[in-house]
Length: 214
Ligand code: AP5
Image (cartoon, rainbow, N blue to C red):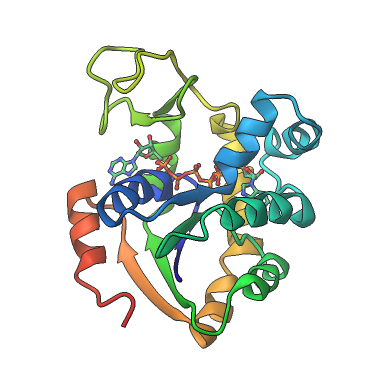
């Protein structure tokens, strides 16, 4: 099985890029953020716990997120590849994920980079569909009709954690807890670094220029 780990700070575009790659390659994408947001929406036990952390921009406890991820990966047995967005976020999660991988699995880390100003602008102007979760940007990737999702017609809203003080905390958590993982991964797996400040088309082209799985 091929695993592509989408890595990078909040708002760099992992979900947006992941959706395009998932459709092009026919690899399902598992986003731990989406899984947790669904649980919050459905007010499950996990959702109620997770919401407390997500609202503040903190990481949800590792075991909660890992159990949810493991279940999703288990449902994709028949696929040739899987993209993972939002996991791991710290060394402990990386070790948990390593235990899932089998000897013949091929793992590539796609490390997206851009300046803080680019990601803050992307997060501030992001809108998502309340219904299907489709991602827009008011300036860069706007919906055809203001406030309405192109895919399902649902209402577009701002994520609770896209408020300035929560954005600042999420970036801090990324710098302190998640970014150090790059060193861990560069010793273990292939890490491809891609400048994500370009437009989406150029980013996808840059990703595909690499011989990812060889
Ligand atoms: P999560 O949902 O994973 O959020 P994140 O990592 O902070 O990433 P985002 O979803 O904010 O951004 P993105 O990189 O996907 O960017 P997007 O494509 O939307 O996590 C949320 C929370 O859940 C965490 O804070 C934590 O509490 C919890 N959580 C999740 N996983 C966890 C874990 N493993 N452990 C513990 N807790 C966990 O794009 C952003 C904007 O930019 C959009 O408006 C988009 O339209 C626009 N855009 C994208 N690409 C481009 C481009 N190339 N050009 C112009 N605009 C672009």
